[in-house]
Every structure is written in C-alpha cells, then in structure tokens.
Image 1 (cartoon, rainbow, N blue to C red):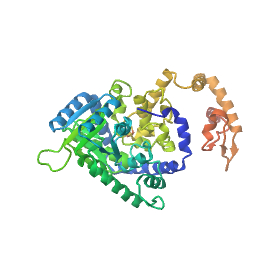
Image 2: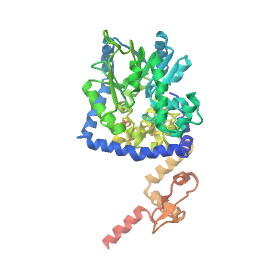
Image 3: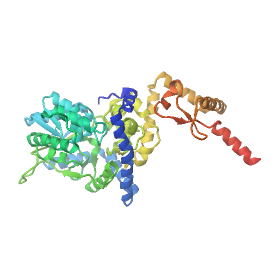
Image 4: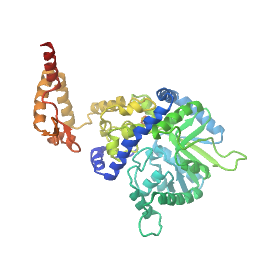
Amino acid sequence: MQTTSKHFRAQAREALANETLQASLEGVRRVMPEIRAAAADRCDDFAALCTQAKDVRQHSIDHLDQLLATFEQQVVAAGGQVHWARTGEEATQIIADLCASVDCRSIIKSKSMVSEEIELNSALESAGYEVTETDLGEYIIQLRGEKPSHILAPSLHVSLAEVGEAFNAKHGIERDAPPTDAGEMLLEARAVLREKFLSADVGITGANFLVAETGGVVVVTNEGNADLSMSLPDTHIVVTGIEKVVRSLVDTGVLLRVLARSAIGERLSNYTTFVHGPRQEGEISGPRGFHVVLVDNGRSQLLGTGFRDMLRCIRCSACLNHCPVYTAVGGHAYGSVYSGPMGAILTPAFAGLPGTVHLPGASTLCGRCESICPVGIPLVKLLRRWREASHAQSLPTAGERFGLACWRLVNRWPLVYRLVTKFGVILVRSLSVPGTGQQRWLKRLPSFTALWTQHRDIPAPAGNSFQAQWRRHRAGRKS
Ligand code: SF4
C-alpha cells in the first residue's frame, strides 16, 4: 500500500489552512456525533447491541479459516468462483486476468476501500481498461485525480464549486460557465453514469460482509449504484478483505443494525443487498459470471499479534467523525486511504511502521473513538502499542527521544518534578497577557512549544502549581 504518511506534519499544516476543507470538517464535528447519539438513543439498548456485534466479529476472527472455507463452498455451490490473493498485487492481477477472460473493455465500480488499498483502478487502467467509479463521491474524486478523504464520504473535502469545475472540465458539455446548482450537477452525473452502466462488461463491488452459511455477499450503499454495478454487466467481481466473513444471516443482521446507526445515524442504509452467485437457470437478469476475490494483504499477519482486535473493524467511520485530530485535519493529511484512529492503526500494519510512524502519534488518546466504536475495538491501547513499537525501533527523531527522556526524568524524581513545575509555572505565567476578569491568556509560546498557540490561545496556568495549591488548602483546613 502506497502512502504519503511520512509527510503527515506538512500535510496537516496544509489541511489546517484549507478553508473549504475546514468548512466541511466543521459540519462533521457539528452534525455527525449528534446524529449518531440520537440514533443510539432511539435504539432499545444500543450498548447491548454493540456487545453482540463485538461478539459476532470476534467469532469471525477466531474462526476465520473455517468460515472462509464454508463461504467458498457455498459460493461454488451457487455457481460462483472464489479467488485468493495474498497481496494487493496478486489481487489486481487476478482481477485484470478475469477482465481479460471475458474480453472486457469497460468496467464500472462501486465504492470499495479494499480496491483503494490495493490501487485497483490504476492497475486496471494500466492494463488498458476504462474504469468508472459510480458512487457520486468516488466519481467526483476520480475526475479530480484524488484519493478519498473519508471512508464513507470520499469527496468530503471538495466544495460544490469545485465539483462544478470538475464536471465542466471532464464532461465535454458546451456551456458558458461551470454549473453551480447541485440538482443540475446530480442530473448531469446521472446521465453520464447511466451510459457507463449500460455499456460496461464488468461490474466490480466491495462487500460489507460475507455470509459463510449462505455464501452471500452483503453490499450496503446509500445511492443504489452498487446494485446497478452488480446486476447490469455480464460479470460481477467482488473484491474484499478476508476478515469480512461472518457466521450466519442472524449475525449479519446484528452488524447491519450497528453499522447504519454508527455510520449515518439511521436504522438502515438506503440499500442493503444480499447477492448469491451468478444468474440461475430461468432467471432473466443478473451477471453470468460471479467471482469473489478475497484479499489478505497483511490481514492474516495481524491475527497472531497484539493488533488482532483491529480485524473486528466494520469500517463504519464513527471513530473518524468523533476524533478531534481527524476533524481538524481531514483524511488526506494521513496520507493513506485509511484515516482517523482506525487508519492510524491499520496503515502501519499494512504499510509498515517506518513510513507511517507519525500516525499513531496523531492522537490525543482522549478515548472518544473507543467509546463509540460499535465493535469495541480498544483503539487507544492499539495506538499506544504502535507508539511503543516505534520507540523500540528507535523511529522517533533524536529530539523527540531526548524530550521523552527529560519527561521521564522529571516524572521519576519528585524533587525534580516540584522544581521544574514551580519554575515552569512562573515562566509560562510571565509570558501571558491579561484577558477579561482574572483570566490571563497565552497567545504565543517560544521555540518548539510554539505549535500549541499557532491556532488558538490557551488559558495561562494559575500562579502556583496544583500541588502547591493543594498543600496550602490542606494547611488552611488544619489551622
Ligand atoms: S474502528 Fe470502530 S468506529 Fe472506527 S471504523 Fe472501525 S468499527 Fe467503526
């Protein structure tokens, strides 16, 4: 998996200065936690449902080999084929070969994070195929030559005016100026995509879940584009990660109930489709070829590690929407298709820690993500685990390691701690300026601490350390 995560700091600075992105992220901060909380409140016992969902996913991870074998048997029994890919390159090669075997020219796709992970589009385009994304957000970023900035809302960072410019540049329609009306643009995209749907030879979708007991593939969307992608072309290829398998239909029902509530604050998404193999004898529609490409790409290696819990993830995006870091810098800053807290754990696992070491550090460890994760992934513990691994491998810079050594020294010896905090409080307070009432504010800090005040003022500390105040308080009570 290609990433630009080593440039996280520069990318985050750029994101903070991007007004369009900041306006979109403000919407995420304001709306998403509220609608998710309201959806949880409307559910009889959402906490119990999440515990059930966690158990379902844990069962999948604990019985991955058996469930995948059962799933394959059921797909084959229904007339489909299952292909196993150890790496992203193997997966893209399998899919390119499948396309070649049906003399394919054009391909339509619905949104799939695994296909982004393995860079499927560029591999297929290099092999000479025309690939069209049909999820509107994915279509917009495809026109702009970008990666998704959110796992559910890939074009979150794009303004309406920028969408109009992209349509104007790529649709070849004669007009005086780019379109500005959202409804007009929607109709335009629909007209363009309808032609693509009708002429495509192969449709590629992802899968939200794979049902072992039935061999079914479950695809959840809000636009219905996946249903057209899988039913109109003659060949349907599903590309997904091996961890998506689930024991039964009943278990799938539990996951669907937590997925929609966590992702979009609804009881269910607009379209939830269960697909079972190719067109059967006597049926008048549906693909004649049905293939499922199961991608490992580092997932099975996680099984035997302390990051195993991460395989429970159902890609609901709730942790992104609640993360103070993601909602400040957006997805592109992470330099990976997976962003936010889940991305900060998955990206080092898939791409290696040396190039992604900033991501586990891009967290306040406030635990907000963990508290709303519907499948109980201990995100804070896993982020901390990556930080420990990065120190074990001496990946932080010499300056960072020196800073931590000083921190350790100060916190280890009470006398040193008291002296440092005493002089620290005096120094920091001397840098503050008066505000309203008794409050003083820090507007600018020197040197390496300057980043703390680059985008905000912070309240100056009280004149004494907490410990000094506590001692005085206790002395006062005794006298
Ligand atoms: S880590 Fe949890 S909250 Fe985040 S996307 Fe995965 S399931 Fe959703």
